[in-house]
Length: 389
Ligand code: FAD
Ligand code: DHB
Image (cartoon, rainbow, N blue to C red; front, side):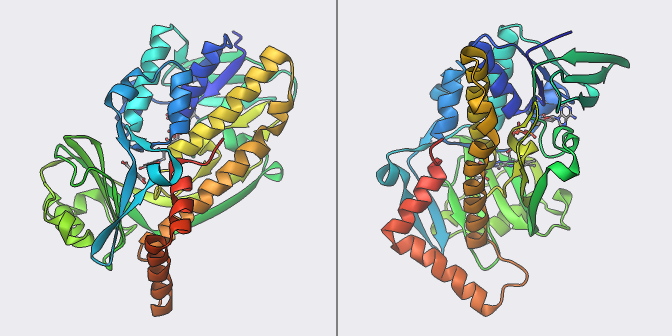
């Protein structure tokens, strides 16, 4: 069996890359470790940069996104008992779109199926062979049988715990990592959002985020201890804590109800360099992780897809390997900026266990500067809506 490209991982990166390549007549198979339903059941990101929306349009899968996505022209920041507003549209001319990662993934799977593109689910023991040579291949097991696919290139879109990054010898990669001493407890509830914009809140009790999926589906997060378990938190305890962390004007209008999903995610900053090893390209969470503050995870995966898709297109359509040769450098330049923004925005809003009174004053001055300074607001808005590709 042969395909031009083997894409390992059927999350948003792998699916978007596959669909873009398909529109250019470049043939790619997707190998996914889990089932389709499992992938679609993972509640994750919710805010899309217009760069990602543009890629969805180019992939021919943006109709539902345009019909159902919510355009957000700005965001609210909760600080010192009050909300202040950052107006993305006025500062940058660009909004963001609220549309769940689950929906992005569903639209991409639907398009893949409609085009009868090959996707193998429930694959096990995926092994990449000879990525540093001219004739790479990928082997895997499925239903107890061993399979092999020969290819030109491999796209490692298999997330942080995937096999692709591990295939690159330790001596050929450099990893940078920072872990954070807290997690995010997230819930989904069939209630109207507390505000028409997202609220990112700094409070003496820790961070909180009020987000949404649609007018009757809300997504809320609070900073929690890493040792907490979702089942430790009753719905009542969650709502009470959220109310304490957001300004009174929001807390008073919060509509609570039974939660339909509750999970805890650790926070991590991580980058591996380079993002290419021979004929293997790392893309998305396989190469980097950001803490979720600022919604850069999915959007940074999308910018990798943009660079990789264009590199492969240039290779097949123009017989030019410039894009391939510069993929890692181009992708990493933008990745590090997203890492910086996510790290900084996390530091602005969370309570850290070892913060001393001076650290707290610095944090408060940093937020007050954002609230009061036009240049800082513009820099924030440019990062939030997404730096150019
Ligand atoms: P993934 O979505 O991880 O997809 C990788 C796919 O590869 C998966 O389907 C996996 O099953 C498959 N796979 C793994 N190993 C193998 C293998 N060996 N063989 C075959 N397939 C394999 N970002 C935000 O912006 N906001 C958020 O609120 C947010 N919340 C998050 C919560 C959690 C718990 C996590 C883990 C991430 C969150 N993110 C969030 C980040 C965002 O969801 C990711 O950046 C995004 O999913 C990256 O897409 P990806 O396709 O690169 O990786
Ligand atoms: C969501 C998650 C984020 O990390 C973020 O910064 C904004 C929104 C969300 O899940 O809706």
